[in-house]
Length: 105
Image 1 (cartoon, rainbow, N blue to C red):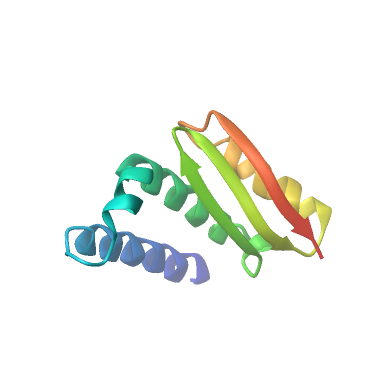
Image 2: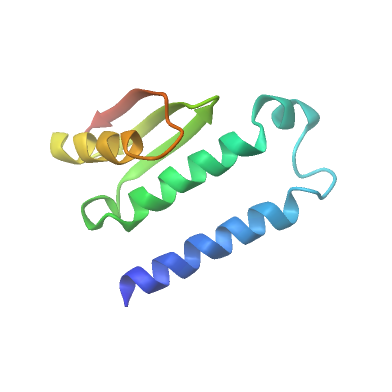
C-alpha cells in the first residue's frame, strides 16, 4: 500500500512538472538552457527510485543530471545507504557517470 501511494505521488509530481513546464515565469530561460528536459526526466526517475527504496525513504538526497552525468548530494544515515543510492543511480538507463557527493551523518 505504501509503495502504491509513493508511486501515485511520483506520477503526480511528474504530471505537475510537465504540466507547468510550459507556463511563463516558472522557469527562467537560463535554467531551461542549462537543464534540457531529458536531464530533468533522468533526475526525476532516479529520485523516484530512491524514494521507493525502503532503506532510503527518509534520506535527504538531491539528484541533478546533465548529459547523462548525475550528481548525488545530500545526507544519509549510514554508508550502506550511500552505496545503495549510488547503485540505484548506476542501474538507471542513460546514466553515464555518477558524482557521489552524499555525506553520511
